[in-house]
Amino acid sequence: MSIRRNERIQALVIKGTPQGESNKLTALFLADGRMINAVAHGARKPASRFGASLEPGTVIRAELRYGTSQDALATLSDGAILNSHQGLKQTLDGMGILFDFLGLLQYVCRCAGGDAELYRRSVTLLDHADQAQDDLSGILPMVRGAVLLHLGRMPDWTCCSLCRAPSPERVSLHGVYCSRCAALNRGETRPVAAAVAGLADRIARGEIPLGVQPWGQLDDVFDWMLEASGLRQENNRGYTTHAGR
Image 1 (spheres, rainbow, N blue to C red):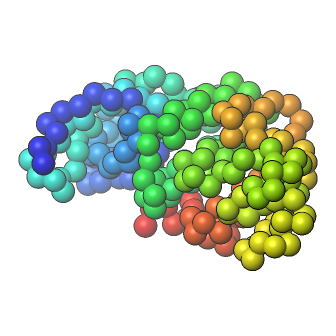
Image 2: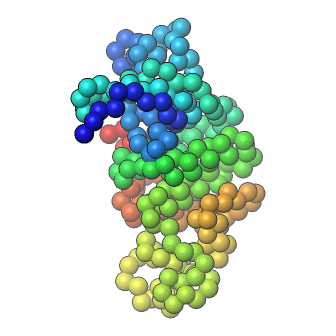
Image 3: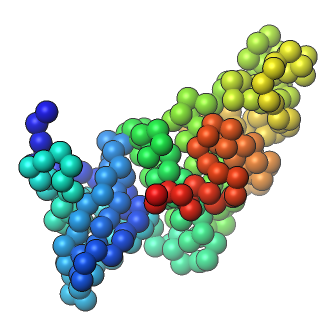
């Protein structure tokens, strides 16, 4: 297999860790779906050329250089800021959502890999969160919906997966069901209201619903689906806690 020597690609900064006296080890989610670690030499010096470009949640144009062996770390030689998402970083609520967002992305990419579509959806949602400060409650449910789509776990929410009856009432990892078909299903199911199923369907179709929505109920359903998929722990922020391991 040939070794990449250099590359210029859009990337989302996930996290940064000090390395040595002045370097920073930066986790990057690349536009083609790869999650990599890259060393930014001198990034922690006061006059670093990187400036604020390596803050978590920033979208950059990354210039990467690769070593001569497959296991060598990439070097981040430059990172021009494309979108700092500064609006999202100005409040405690915004910062909490941002770090939950990034932690979930990192955890899912490490467990199941990423792709360009997951990157596109993630950056689109970050852009929306940055611009819609009064509508933050739906961000994490929409992120979880994007992850479930990426994992192939999002069913057709418009009808029962077995008998095709409209208005499904229960959901499992394998589909949504009317009450009669849910009783025949041996797997675990959870109740889902019609408004929640409709909201989930809109997210599955790539929409970004605005305004007052049953976000809390949808988040409970998506959170359970992620947990049942084995991609998060019991505690609410388990994916954030374990993402760096």
